Image (cartoon, rainbow, N blue to C red; front, side, top):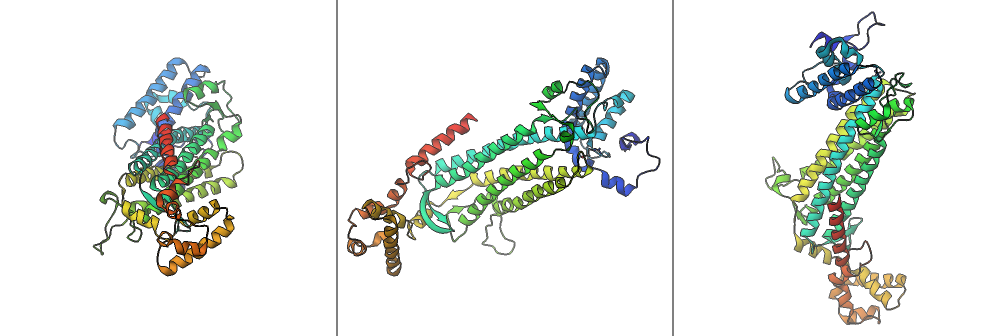
Length: 465
Ligand code: ARG
C-alpha cells in the first residue's frame, strides 16, 4: 500500500487521525472497485468538460486523460491490480493512482466535481451496461423457450388451476406463457434504462458546479440522453436502483414460478419432464435420486433479490436531502441483484435447453380426470341449455363417471341421454382431446391454429429485436 493511495481525500480541517476500526468501516473499495472502469470513463468526460470550460489547458487535459487510459490498461492487463490495492473507495483510488502518474496536475481533476455526483454517475453508467447484458440474457431465455415450444408442437399437457387438473393445453402454450412474462420483463428494463439515462455529473456536492462546464456535452460524451434538472435531487436520487431492483425482483418471481413448474413436472408423480444429468444432482445417501437443484436454487435466489429491493427502499426512506453516507449501502445490494439475476437467467436457460418431455405421459394426464367436462357443458349450451344448468347437469354426470370409475367419453349414449335427452351421438366428437383444444380458437387461446400463429409471431418479434 503506497502512502498516497491510502491517504484521505480531506485533511486540512483534521488534526487527529481516524480510528482504524472506523476507517475500515467507512471503506467501500472492497466492493465499489467494480465501478473502476466507469469511474475512469466518467473522469475522462469530466476532464474534457474542464478543458472546454478553460479550467484545464488542453495539454493538461491530455496528460490527465492519457494517465486515466493507462490506468484502464493496467486494470486490464495486470492481475490483481484492483484486488491488491487499499483505498477508501474507487474514486479516491483512481484519483490517487492518477496523481502518482502525473503529479500535482492530477489534483486538478476534481475541480467542480464531488464524489457525490461522481458516484451517482458511475452507478448509472455501470447499471446501464448491466441492463443491456440482462436484456440479452432475457432474449436468450425467450429464444430457448420458443425453440422448446416449436420442437414439441404437438405435445399436450394438463392445464391446472389450484393445481387440480383443469383443461388440456398445448405444451407450446405453456412455453409461450413464460415467454410473455419475459417480454414484459424486457420492457420493464427498457423503461428503467430510460429514466436511468440522465447525467448527474455537474451537480457537484449538492448545489451545482460553479465552473462553466457544459453539462450537455459531457452527457453526450457518456451516452446520456439528458442532464439532471436539479442538483439536490441528482446527488441523492437512487430511484433508478430501486426501480431496477423491482424489475429484477419481477424477473426472479417469474423464474421462480418457472422453476416450480419444472420441479413439479419432473417428479415421479407427474413424470412430464426428465431433467438431463447436466442440470441435476444425485443424493449422497439415496442412490436413486435425481434432484432438480438448479431450479431449486433459482427459486431460492428469488428471495435474496426481493430482500435487496426491500433493503434499498429501507436505506432510502428516511434520508434528508441531499447525499448521505447511508447511500454507500446501495452498492452491494445492487451488485448482488445484478449477479444473481444474470446467473439465474443463464442457468434457467440451460435447464430449458435440457428438458426432455414424456409426451405419452402428459397426454395421459391431459385425458384423465374429466378435463373435458367444460366441453360437455359447452356442448349442451350449443343445444340451447343455459350454461348454469348445463354446468349442474355435467357435474352430476362427472359424479356418475367417478362412481363408474371411467371418463366422460367412456359413457354410453344411453347413459348420456339419461342425464339430458338433448345429447346425441355427436357428443363423443366434441369430447375428444383434439376438439377440446380446437375450440379455444379466439386470440390468446390454446387452439393449435392460434398457438401456431403465436409461435410465428413470437419468432418474428424476437428476430426483429
Ligand atoms: N463511497 C461513497 C458512496 O458510495 C462515495 C461518495 C462519498 N461521498 C461523500 N461525500 N463521502 O456513497
